[in-house]
Image (tube, rainbow over all chains, first blue to last red; front, side, top):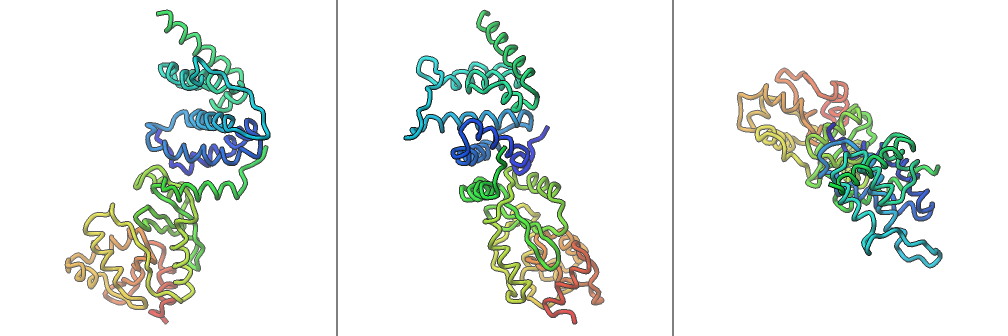
Length: 150
Length: 187
């Protein structure tokens, strides 16, 4: 599948990415994160080699920006710390580890364990549903364990 | 669910253009000869399309100039303003920069000559060929006119047959007639 013009990518995913950011950050902070998500996508867009898994890609960018937004100090909020492994954020390690997985499993693992999305959101990101997302994540984890055992 | 507001949508589209992240920006411009799809690269105006099917045209722009195609009003505003003035009769010459970089040499040369044909005047295909120093290439000039990426701004409507007939126009003869009438070249 060839990469569609950015206009189509934006038009296809803007509503659900916005809804996702509203769920993660609340209405007030979602707008800035929305703009930043699509600007970041636009910068990286020409480097994509094909048009597959664009939805999961958009969710991954939005998730990372939501995390950055969470980290930003805010006077009126007391936010919980995010999971980290030896000081580095979980998503940074996971993205690297998960590179060898098939795309769907990779996205499910990274979004679940790196970005702490629930399975309903991951299902949306994968264009399937929560059950399929849970299966993809556990298949990915099993595969990673097998690799580690080798 | 809170949908993306028109304001947020516009802010993103503006920011994308302002940060120069686009291969092509485009927008729609209303005119007396129908809605025009107008597109520009960072180098200048690259496309004016009559009766555009947006999906198809956007696909073509992406294939020609790069995948980062986005509807964004602000880069098109100068063209919108000049086109409005042209149709209001208050502008006879366009001051817009154009991007013809990807065209073949011959096409570019002919279109540069075409740009010099003054408002309200007409030339024949043969005369334009002669001005482009290819006097026997009247037919080839006809093809270049037919594929003109920037009708109106590059005035291919001012090129007519040797017998005085309007001959043809990619946007339809009716439009060629209205443009020439607007310019006072036709009664």
